[in-house]
Length: 327
Ligand SMILES: CC(C)=CCC/C(C)=C/CC/C(C)=C/COP(=O)(O)OP(=O)(O)O
Image 1 (cartoon, helix red, strand yellow):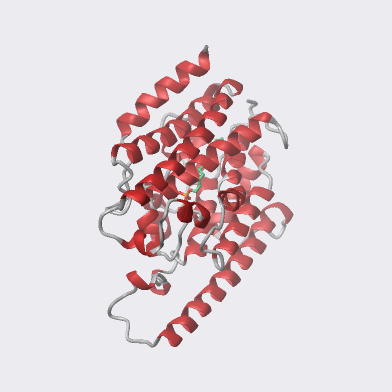
Image 2: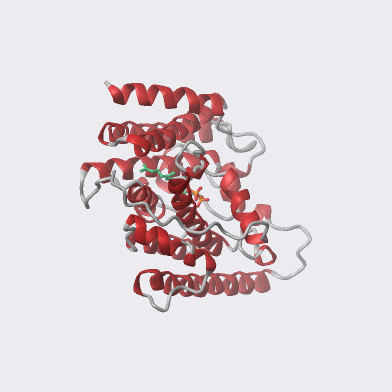
């Protein structure tokens, strides 16, 4: 952990609609900016990174422009829609093409953070510039997130567990790499530090998928691998049931245990980190443990609503993980 974190990014314009939306999203996610105990400068860098990650996700989801969002699952389609299926398909195709074009445009602007001058045009990317300079952030993890969101435009199902892990390489692992860089952790390519971080990030992503089965389905996405669904006798129609069928519970339990095993594999990372980095990563790990607790406590009843992680569970795991890593 060096003193490389000079030059914190300027705070975004307070009170703007974009700022309000970002802070609102921040409260409902597991990205690490909520760690209020961190030094202000570290928090500012994490927030600068988070805002770019969120911007990429929002473009990918069409959430940056609420007027353009559609639910693509036929069982949850807007009942007031009067357009024919054909028109709806065309509209969805148009929106997908639009999101794809905007992701490419954002990626071109993103590259200016490293390649400029001229620097980026988007204010969110302008705020990333000092963080990239101060923390030596690489471009590649951000590009992987863009690639994940580009894939989201045409991939909504995963055949196997390995296919899902492949998606997490693009969508989750980069976040750990960025966080490690913000903390100045020594994490060269292929290192144990990096591999353990990847495991934790993948686990967090899978646990989020488990908690949000119903919500994701409403967005036309199924992250439970098709092969596993077949093995547990689960069909997509089962995922629309008001009460979670036993077969679905068993499948979600299975994926939760897989994710917990990934957390176990990643946990020794704490022993390789120091200071604020160790505390922050213990927090993410504890968040994952708390999410697994929530799923178990609900007896994997994920269709009634997303089982919510309890703060007290996270606090309990935080203390435990820190104590464990100290011995
Ligand atoms: C060093 C280390 C191990 C750091 C951990 C960093 C961290 C919090 C990774 C989370 C990965 C993840 C679940 C991404 C998607 O989250 P999202 O809430 O953006 O998901 P969404 O795209 O579905 O909204």
